[in-house]
Structure formats: C-alpha cells, structure tokens
Image (tube, rainbow, N blue to C red; front, side):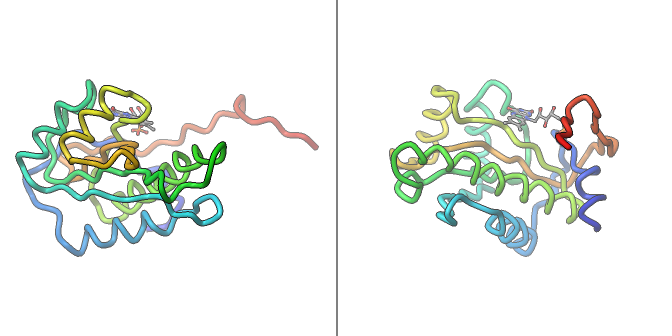
Length: 169
Ligand SMILES: Cc1cc2nc3c(=O)[nH]c(=O)nc-3n(C[C@H](O)[C@H](O)[C@H](O)COP(=O)(O)O)c2cc1C
C-alpha cells in the first residue's frame, strides 16, 4: 500500500473478530514501531505485547475509554532510564508517539484494525496499567494499542483544512 493511501485509510477501529494476530504480523508491527525517529536517537521505547486473555480483560478496565475487546494489545512505554536527561526527558513522549503512529500505519497496511487508547498523562490509568503489567517505576505506559482483524471498517478520509495552515513566504 502507498504511504498516502495508508495515511487516509488509517482510522480507529474498536470492533474486532476473534481471529488471532500472527507472529509474523506482530513482528511487522514492531519493526515499524522501531523504525520511527527519536530525539538524539535515544529510542526510549519499550513494547509490551499482550495476547493473554486475562491480562487483556484487565487492561480493558485500566482506563475509562480503554474498554475494547481485541485479540492483541501493545502497550507502548517510555523507559525513563533511556530517555534524555533533565528538561529534555519529556521527548520520550514524542518518540513513543512516533512509534505508535508507525504501528497504526503498519496495521492498516496489513489489513488489520487498531486504536490508540491514551494512558499517560492520566495518573490513575498509568498506575492501573503499571500494576497490571508489574512495570518498574522508570517504565511509563503512554498508551494501549488494541489490534485485531477489523469487524468494522470506518471510511477513509482526508481531514485537511486550509485554516490550520499558515504560510510564511
Ligand atoms: C493521544 C490519543 C489518545 C486516544 N485515546 C483514546 C481512547 O482512550 N479510547 C479510544 O477509543 N480512542 C482513543 N483515541 C483515538 C481517537 O479518538 C481518534 O484517533 C480520533 O477520534 C480520530 O479518529 P480516527 O483515529 O478514526 O481518525 C486516542 C487518540 C490519541 C491520539
């Protein structure tokens, strides 16, 4: 699929069939994630790949809008011990967001559906996910990406708005 087509076809999918995601698909998703840019190439991301039904059920309750049934979840985390020091540390969020978007685009390319459910900076949700996955203090969950074979296919769309663009010529 062309990048342009994937960009327009990537939509949040929240309903999935029971069909499992293959090892090969998981590998493609993770390779896409780690192809992303990161500040000073610190790559402070870590990925928890969850297919265990009991853990998936717990994650559904971790945050108000994370209640989605899917065969797979990838929890994208920032490892603060790998992040840049002091005031540059929050760049981990942008690094992990770039990795997340890459996963969503690769899912689209593979014909899978996915949705990004935000966790950081919601403190309660962060704690819930950290407890469920027994994360260390340095590992901050940015989001839960639910992935599966889509049981709904939202329309491709282009949200371009000239009003959001400021040309300085
Ligand atoms: C930071 C962030 C947090 C989000 N959190 C949630 C969430 O908790 N639950 C959910 O169903 N969708 C969540 N979304 C998906 C957005 O609702 C969705 O991207 C937006 O409505 C645009 O729709 P689209 O993804 O189909 O283009 C989140 C997206 C982002 C970028």
